[in-house]
Length: 330
Image 1 (cartoon, rainbow, N blue to C red):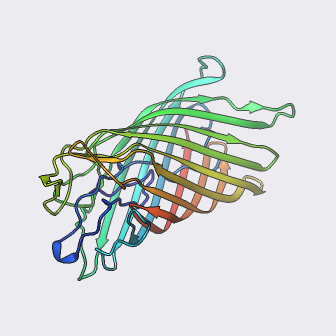
Image 2 (cartoon, one colour):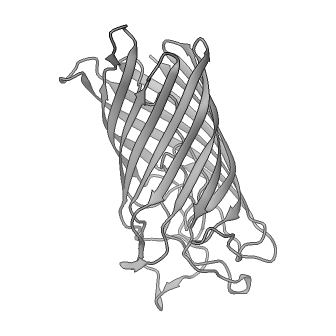
Image 3 (spheres, helix red, strand yellow):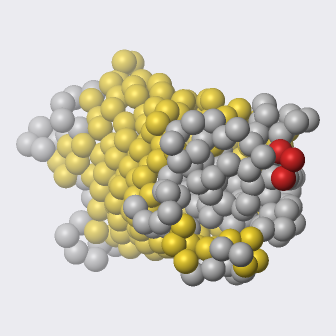
């Protein structure tokens, strides 16, 4: 099983849909979604990318979980008092050209490099999971197309969008004998569409619609020897997923907006183990909370986002997550 770090890190653990007893050791390795997925990492004014050129962003996020949920959304009884803390720092470089390729579209690219610190603590009488400490996470890279804002008759931007075709590359620290790893050990494709709509002065609504396809992990991680249908676990493949980041905010002071930020994640196909379908393995989660956006200056901006999760199935439930994000355009 691997710890899945969102972009930036979001604490999520997925589990096979059965319960192991403490006397039998930890549960079998899950087929988990990859490190690097963006659950709430981007929020207010997501459709904008700033002026053309090179942009640097820094994300810092803390997540903590004390509940691991089954397919029915209940606490997994194999664990006694689990506590898993994750701190992630991500540096992102992105660029889009000032030259349009037509229709107000501009070609660009993005590169995200995470560093992840994991700390797992479990009760004396339940199953335990071994963490792999701190290290490099999986790099996300890909091309994107940024569109110019649509301006109304009063000169106010009302809609802006971007499409991207990201690939998550298994560069992260990974130990097949550890349960919680910064890296996922498999490639993933993660295209998305981000947009911002400003229906009235001082109001904005943003969303990012994501799709995820995962390739096989030929060396699944676990601190415990695992079997599936009477055979050793040779490979795993996470199911396809779709999710949305969403926001709504109001500018309470010039250049300062407050509002609601959230995400809804749903797995749309079953996981696989040794090429066979794993029933009742699909994940689901809703995260929501208050947030703030501050446009410091034309080339600088700051975000503060908080989330609490509910409706969790086949993964851990984050008690709370706090993220700060800073962007500077050169």
